[in-house]
Length: 384
Image (cartoon, rainbow, N blue to C red; front, side, top):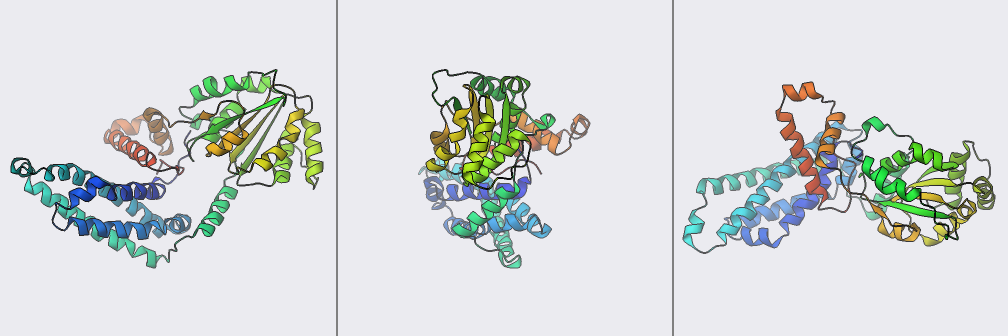
């Protein structure tokens, strides 16, 4: 399941990546030279987008406490849709303008050219007005170190558990049954370490955690393993803290120990002779040494034990994984729509009364997928 929240503000950064990429494309640059003042219009748009893009991280932090900032982000998101449409038209008609024959050039209605020009001028005007929000809301550019702190704060707030509401899950049943569980049920008797690691890799918000939760709570999995544990790692790299969390999850009791050695001895005794399943959710660290230290107690489990690791990083999967990595794909459009209806509390009665909602929803899903195909991360997004 895609965990969805605040589509307007979450999509702004993705849209800006798309728009800046299009503005830098050879097609747009070549086409703009054929239009009156187009190069200046596009340069102005590019400059304004870059300024705004620099403060989006701060704005997305503030919008949870300031409704005006949230509205500002929503306005930027809507404007980004319009700007993307205009750039597509620039590319389409620009290709015709690049043809030297008068016949082809005159086939472009002058009214259409004026319309595109007027709309671009309007977009630039609105972007400049919205740019004033940087000063109005005292938005700051976020440097790399500050961004790391913000990410850490977000990940600390986003702790996960093994529980899942299956009624809110769409489109992952096949992934769970045919691609993950079947890997967990296989026992490699020649494995000297007694346990194997299955990694689920995908961009943020795609549903890695939800898939792991579905597997963790599956009846067949429940019956196959003697002991289970869940720990949300995020950016945590303290082996002792992670080990303590695994112990507490496996035993259901608080662990009052304080040192890595006592933690690892305790976990060794907890796992010894048992076929276990340990989920390490949202792993970021690719420190090979930390993983080698963390896994030492795992080797005392019964043969056939497994660990599931969810991560955005292929490097993490290369370090930790021992069986083929499962790369999680996006949901089919119909499942995205079902999830959107569920988040928006829209049922068949609403859809029958307002059939236009279907077209609007499909456009939202298509726009999200276009944006996500252009960037290397996926904000937890799609609902409004």
